[in-house]
Image (tube, rainbow, N blue to C red; front, side, top):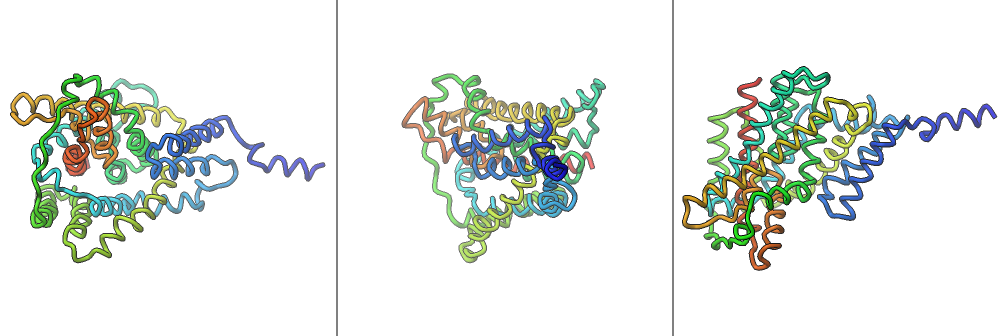
Length: 378
C-alpha cells in the first residue's frame, strides 16, 4: 500500500494545482482556436502545446535543464530566433505594393503611434504606485513595442532593455499577432462608414525587378547609418529580401523562407509557450503587460485607419481606410483581415495587395521604432 500511495503521489494528477489546471485549459483553448477556427495555427499550435508541456507537474520541461528552457536560453536572450525570423520574413516579402504606392508608408508610420502612446501610458501607471504595476522606463519601452504587433521585434527590444520581462512580453506579442482576426475587425468597422469600406482602389503600377533589388540595399544602408540600433533587425530583413529578389541564390532564399523559418518558428513557439506556466504567468505584472499590450495594439490599428481617412481629405485617388489597419506589422495576417472586411462590404473589392503596402511598411516602421527606443532608453 505504501508503494501504491507513493506511486499515486508521484503522478501529475496528484500534484496538479489550480493555477496549472487553469493555464492548461487556456493553452488547450489556443490549440482549439488554431485548429477549429484557423487562427494563425503556425503560431498558436506551438505556443499552446508548449504551454501545456510547461504546466504538467513534475515534468520539468520549463525548469532549469529542461528542453523548453534550453531552447529559450539559446534563442530568446541572444536574439538569434527573432533575427533569423526577420531574415525569413524578408525572403517571403514582396516590396512591390509599397513601392507602387509609396503613400502607404505613412499608414505604416501612423500605426506605430500605439507604441509611443503606450510607452507614456505604462510610465503613467507606474507613477500611480499600484502594487505589481511599477514599470521602469526600460520596462515601459519593452511593453510599448507590443503595439507594433511584431513578435520578433518585441523579443529583440526586450532582450536588450528588460530581460526579466522577456517571457510575458513574448507571450503578449505573439498572442495578439495570432488574434488579429478577432481584435482588428471591430475597431475597423467602428472607425469607418459603409461607404468608406466600399471604396475600390485603382490598380497598382508594375514595379521593375531593378527597383526591387535596389530597395533592400538602400533600406539597409539608410536605416543602418541613421539608426544603428535598428540595423540588426532591418539588416536581416533586407538581406532576406535581397536573396529573394536577386534571383541568383534561390536555394538560399528558399531555405530562409521555408525550412529555416519553419524550424525557428517551432522552437520559438514552444519557448514562448513555456512562459505560460502558472507561476510565471499568473502575476499582476504579467496581466498588466497583457492589458497594456492590448491597448497598444488597438491604438496602432486605430491610428492606421484614421491616417487613411485624413489622407483621403487631401488626395484625389481615394484610399480605402481599411488598409490602414494593416499598418501594424503582423504580416500577412493584418493584410488578410483588411481584405476580408473589405469583401464583406463589397464582394468585388479585393484589397489584399493594396493592404500589403502598409503591412510591409509596418514591419519597417516597428523596426525603426525599436531602434529609436533602444537609442533613447538604453
